[in-house]
Length: 210
Image 1 (cartoon, rainbow, N blue to C red):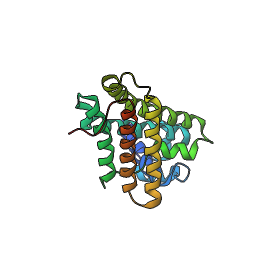
Image 2 (image 1 turned 90 degrees about the horizontal axis):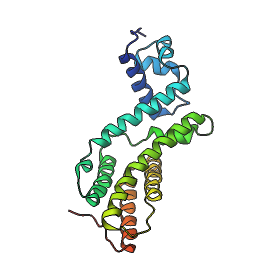
Image 3 (image 1 turned 90 degrees about the vertical axis):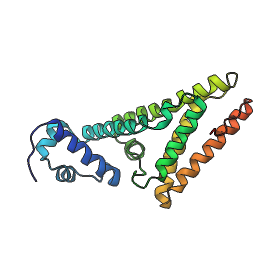
Image 4 (image 1 turned 45 degrees about the vertical axis):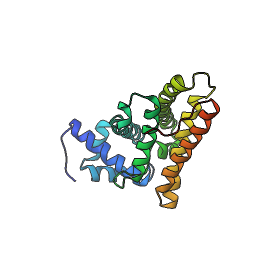
């Protein structure tokens, strides 16, 4: 195992190695020794940047979140001016991710929430914060759709956005259990149909445009 200089690159190597290992094995099953070996960093180097494994776990969670946000921010739906097209573009993007064999069908935030919520309250809080931010992203799109097409409706966009987060996280679990990513695509189709039903009740169809 080689010794590396104390540079930001070293921290990046530790975060990348930790993210890959923890996505594959979970937080508890991933040892500090494994992380150091994969990153090519000594234990002293790791603990220079992180006070404890929990501290590392929180940093890895933030690292994963930022990488996901960069990917989402580059998705085509962000440039769509019409909120209804942007909503369908959002759902299309996540369905496309499910089909892409190069994208791992696992979410470190959801994994940590399941594994560590009872034992690591700080990590549980971090997971809650990030899942809430993800829901807020969709809520803003739903608010825009409601504001343009269904102003008088009583649709609870916050609850609806949280429903999608629950549906998406659950579909990741089912996809692992079934070893079949088609369940993710099916879940997104069902959510789209549910949206159609809700907005029809408000007097506006949100069927896919274009």
